Amino acid sequence: MSLTIPALAGKLAGLQSSAIRDLLKLTARDDIISLAGGLPDAALMPRERIALAADTALREPAVLQYTESSGWPALREVIAARESAKIGRTIPVAEVFITHGSQQALSLLAEVLLDPGALVIVEDPAYVGALQVFRAAGARIVAVPLDSDGMRLDVLEDLLAAGERPALVHTVSTFHNPGGVTLAPERRRRLAELAEAHGFWVIEDDPYGELWFDQPAPAPVASYSPQVIRLSSVSKILSPALRVGWMIAPERVSRAVELLKQGADLCGSALTQQITTDLLSDADWLAAHIASIRTTYGNRARALVTAVRSTFADRIRCTAPTGGMFIWAEFLDDTNTSALLPTALESGVAYVPGAAFAVSDTADNSLRLCFTTSDEQTLTEAVTRLAKASSA
Ligand code: PMP
Image (cartoon, rainbow, N blue to C red):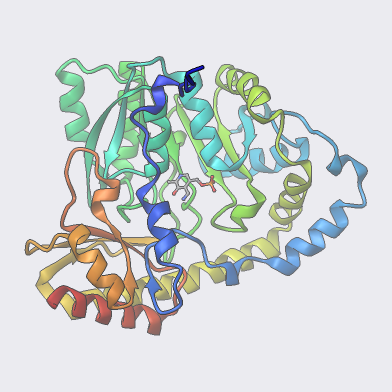
């Protein structure tokens, strides 16, 4: 009897594994300084405080039980209070939905908000985790470039004027991954106005907003309109292993997301959600903890930018981030960063070529450098190695 091989769903045809995750496998070697991964520094994760919270949580049998699909009630309350303060209006608990990291919110929202072929506007370069989700949803993706003030709203307005009707616009508004830039306050207001005038959703994807160096990030885009669905998580301030993210969205969106979450995983972990509740409620401890991450990352970012600028002078232009985890650099000669990567790895330094994040522009001469997991001296050495590789 001949064998008939069963098929995978047609929508998988266009999907590829994330180039970054594939690359990370190569860069785990000890002799390579990796500025490639987008990981928070494990040494700054509050292991002992988490252990203490876990110990306390485990005295309560309910943390080992299934919990509500919309999240552990005490956590939803803490998040509602924190987000109300950020957004500048009272966020009812019903508008807070806890997800398995903010990535799950993206994936569930794509199912709730997009019909196949719907138009999604993303930034160029884009967060690849969002691109994967929107591609899997069968969306038509159009990219709007970034400049030093974030998404180019003049380009978005041109698209709207030309008759494009997006179902949603995705923006990493603050300390962009990978672009390192922050959407300027007047653009935040304008984006919200455009969403209301043209009837599209905005997803404000903001896992980095707390990681500012010298001054707090601007008010969220969500503070200008309830049509902005806001996502964040504790991955970059506590630990990604907690897998605690959240979505602030109108109740009808949350209710739809809840139906899908039931099908995806029934509910999140009451245990990690209670641990998170404990840490987020410990205001003085939390403030000191986040302040120390800000100081460490700020010093690292400055060291990396200084090294890049002094080593490459006018051969490279790079962002000087005011928070977050990344700088985005561009060779102004015709150095192709994908072609350079094997030589860079041989010289003992890894980065992610811009092409991995590119949507319309090819970003062939660009690269993303993550400064979170190396100290200042190591970052400076990484730049020396990069210079050696690029002049080889
Ligand atoms: N959004 C952006 C812009 C990210 O960079 C990331 C992770 N790197 C996420 C969402 C997802 O993070 P998590 O699921 O851990 O909250």
